[in-house]
Figure 1 (tube, rainbow, N blue to C red):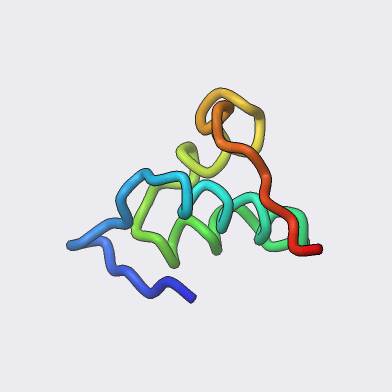
Figure 2: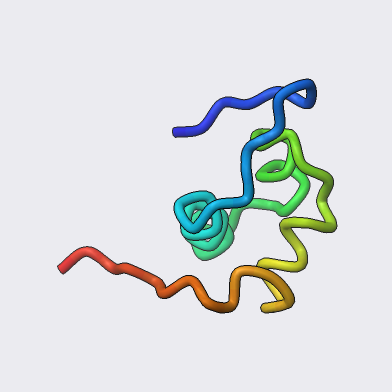
Amino acid sequence: MFKFNPENPAPFTDEIVLYVRRRLAEGWFQHVIAAELGWNQGRVSEINTGKRGVGVQQQLPL
């Protein structure tokens, strides 16, 4: 879905947080998600552990 490079990293938006959560739930590795977004792996880890993006509500399709 998102294709960013390290020179133009993905912004930290609600949509991106949901994207990261979905990928983590599907079993993707944090470093793979981070590379795809142009982030470091620590940023993805913060979403995974709830240190960032806590206010973003998961919107599951019905």
